[in-house]
Image (cartoon, rainbow, N blue to C red):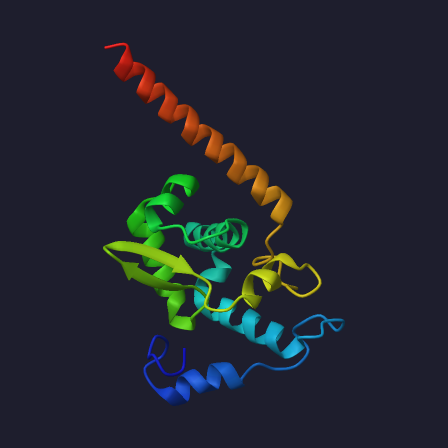
Amino acid sequence: FIREGRAPETLAERLKIVLGVGPGKASKISFSRELDDLYLCLLNEAIGNDRLDDTHSIKRLRMILGTLTSLHGHQDSDCLAMILEEDREDIEATVKSSGATNVIAYQNIFGSFYPYFPHVSLPEFLNDADRCTDEMFFVDAPRLEGYLFRRSLDIINHGFDVTSQEVNK
């Protein structure tokens, strides 16, 4: 975030975001309070002024964050697009724009776009209701896993339908 030039133009502006994290935003019982405050600050910075609108782009970012916390292993943008019923280009644009705060990093490997968390503690933070005190970013793992399971079954059923139609030709 600071050295790679992904966020605001100047180093001073990027440091201001990181150092501007004030005490009291995270849960009092959290052992990693400063890290939690930093994550909340970066997540809020990632959505910017869209928070007031609660737009589809915020919902998409939340679904990407949740899906990445629930799925083990890296999934490319085509897979995420299929699971989340979104356009691949929209997934990639959302990841790139949130990359300005390094909430989600990404790699292009052999022409495929792979989003991932730059630090292992972020998924833990997003799944912990005591640490992630902002409802907008909290990932309710059992509920999301149920949704992902249903979507996976829909995708499998669709694949069977296409295959059976081709066999019956």
